[in-house]
Image (cartoon, rainbow, N blue to C red; front, side, top):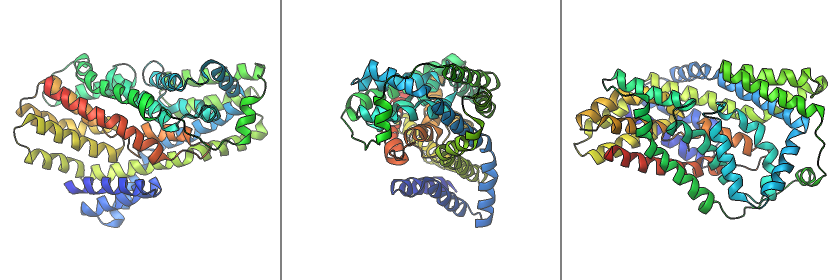
Amino acid sequence: MAMAVIISVLLMMILSLLRVNVMISIIIATVVAGFIAGESLTDTITLMVEGMSAGGNTALSYVLLGAFAVAITYSGITSILVRSLLKVIEGKRSVMLLIIAAVASLSQNVIPVHIAFIPILIPPLLGLFDKMNIDRRGVATALTFGLKAPYVMIPVGFGYIFQEIIMTNMNDNGISLGIYDVTKAMLLPGLGMIVGLLIAIFFSYRKDRIYETTNKQEIDLETENITFEKKHAFTIIAIVAALVVQIFTENLILSALTGLFLMFLFFVVPFKKGEEVVSEGMKMMAMIAFIMLVANGFANVLKTTGSVEALVEATSGILGDNKAIIAFVLLLVGLIVTMGIGTSFGTIPILAALYVPLASAAGFSPLAIAALIGTAGALGDAGSPASDSTLGPTSGLNADGKHNHIWDTCVPTFIHFNIPLFIFGWVASLIL
């Protein structure tokens, strides 16, 4: 069963790189994983569908957020934002990307809305990106950095949840560690992601990339400034209300519904436009939502059949006593597992149960073990076709159909984040 994870994940990646639809690639990988694990086709599909139900909340959240984003765009307030940015940073592409990375970082810690801001902020800026000849792969890298690096390094918001999961699972497996010890252990791996971001912005994607720009985009950017009106003030109220609801309820569905309700209540969007707004939102986010559903099904097949645990156990059984080799292999296993499942948070409990006794026996310190578990869990989140850290950026950048999920988001983020995260995490496990 250990090979079920390796073969299915590699198959998913190869099919995706060959431009087979991501959702179809995941379904094929799921069927193959079930077959290798000894499940019948019918049982595999049943497990997949059962797992998909766990992602229903997320899928509905994405669709409603898409509708809310369209409603905000309809108000015209995003045109004001675009023109303001154009005046301030025209020609300063690196500054633009650094600002995007900073805003995305705030979404994980200071204002923990995760990917909710992307369909609202990014689509209106696409015309500006094209006008500045910005390579959207750089934007995708900046967004994914903000969605990932803060929770790896900073114990606030989603970062607190991530690091608390590491701490709790280490404590449950016999190693007493505080939350700030985990933070200390994850600083060096997180530094690797900062290095990757700087390489992406100042080297990999610094050159012009020309996109075919529609006449509508040119008109939107070149017309005279729009006067700030009452409807724009109501739009800001709706956005703030949705944010407050999300923070206090931690429920994106309620947050998006609140925003939509207020947009209609204040007549920012006429009731007769309601069906059009929701339909446009579904067009923008439905594919992302379905990919997340199928990814949950894939994860359920791997977990229920015991394939992930079998892979880790098989790996631990063949390792020697060389700490450098042990750390390398454990991180590699984490990369493979998370690339398939698409969630770093969900893999921590699985990895910790087997990493703690193995790494302890090999002589790793508690901080080194925390670095191994945290890095192994985070690896693959960037670069995975099924991760919201890549699906979120794609949902915004592909609103006009010019951005490919695999080659323009997954491959760039894998190169610039997973590789340095692996290297820095490996070094951290050896020196802590």
